[in-house]
Image 1 (cartoon, rainbow, N blue to C red):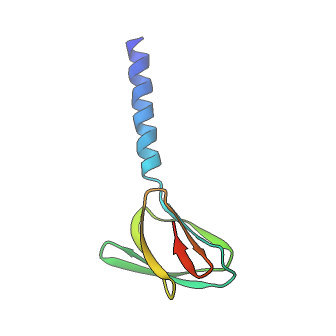
Image 2 (cartoon, rainbow, N blue to C red; image 1 turned 90 degrees about the vertical axis):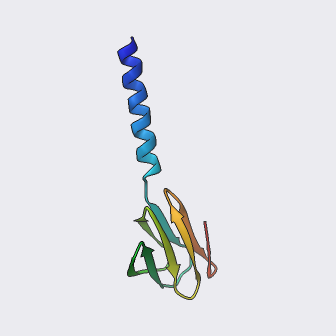
Image 3 (cartoon, rainbow, N blue to C red; image 1 turned 180 degrees about the vertical axis):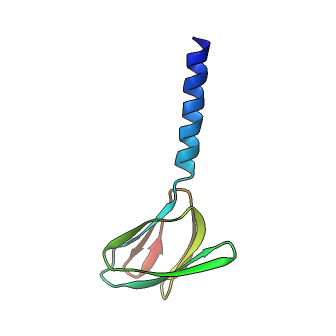
Amino acid sequence: MKRIITTISATVILLMGTIAAMPADLKNEDGKRYEVKVHDGGTTRNTWIDGSSTILSICSSCEIEVVGVGKMRVSGSDKLVIKNGKLSK
């Protein structure tokens, strides 16, 4: 019985760690395309997000800059949304 409880506890801890490590998403609810800069540590990755689309798993912890809209820090399973030319979580 003790071994079953230990196994269940280890599984729960593993799953919690997996959930916490899930990357953030960026969703564009506007109809236009935006330039996006992902600032992750000392590097910057340039990309685009089309209108009415989503970039899944953009990063696990970074600052996302939507050019002309704003920038915001995200981590974990945050969902960043562009809507009406504004950025929000």
